[in-house]
Image (tube, rainbow, N blue to C red; front, top):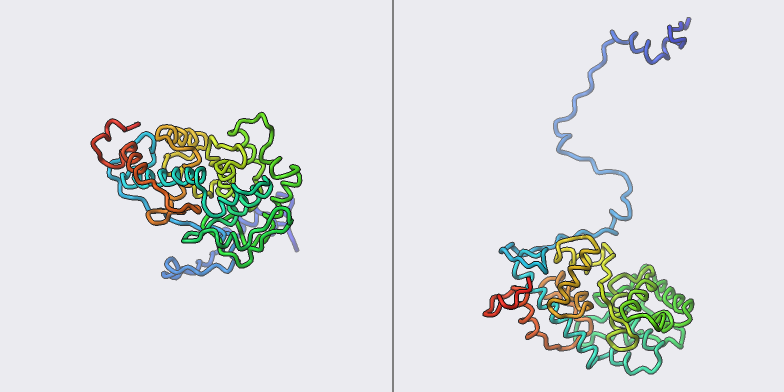
Length: 335
């Protein structure tokens, strides 16, 4: 017959009394763990997440040995060879911009010669979106698949060979291209969306266009490159005052954090501005320079540039950054 305890519960169900009743019972010992169980792990049978399956890529970046290098302009660098490499890439990137401005080649020249701003902007977009390949004919694939704005057709990118800075994701198909055309339709035209207010400064126009073109599948790098092309080739009056380092996964942003030794966006921009103004290179030159610096020696992305003369400028920048000993290194040291 069931009995009730002093807590007015069935004694067998009372958490207090049932514990006292079983206090004298002998608890069977737990089975001993196999000695090898600490060393052997059983593979999990849980289905891996999509991120673990391949969305996330972790790459350990090699750093040169610390040789005591110090420069207030490059607080993140501790090796002279890294500073020298950055000086070379700054010189190359600045020379590429001068070439685009004075003597563009390939499809860049076509952008300049077109007489319709809509066709100019659309061709520049396709160049930045697909990206020139490295090699003797960097524009061959873009030229093969490009379309005109007036046709309303999208380039067929199913079998296209993409460049190293492409924005195209085959899994998204033509969604980004469609989004760009939809953006232009909402603005009234590409020109209207990119020019904005006539009273804006070139810097503000660049900033607003960069914000307006923030669409899925068109990341920071290709978007920044598009606006630099349109401004440098003289299609629209655009000029950046910053690098817009907001994308944590963008390789230029990652490189900037390493070079400038800080992750805060405001201080990153301040230090980038200090470097550009001190060594006298355009702000937009830092974009490709930082990207190429992160690629290591021999990994330069030319961005469709041909042979450009930059060696003399590189030597001067090395002296300015104390990245190469020279007779006037002390005089040119900005730090």
